[in-house]
Length: 67
Image 1 (cartoon, rainbow, N blue to C red):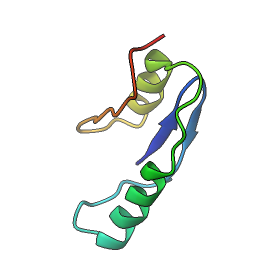
Image 2: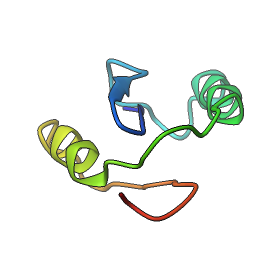
Image 3: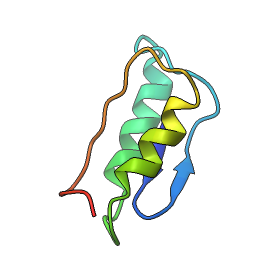
Image 4: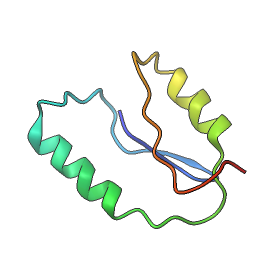
């Protein structure tokens, strides 16, 4: 799953993605490259949302410090 977050959280995918799925991973990379960092970084809300999906692991990419 892929979530985009700043002050709000936007779910970008609705299912778990396998790293071997090159099409989906390519689409995600394009999506990540198009993100325009604006506003604050609400890590607490983002992590709470992600944890509700019961992930095996979490990777957080941020442009700065949490606010």
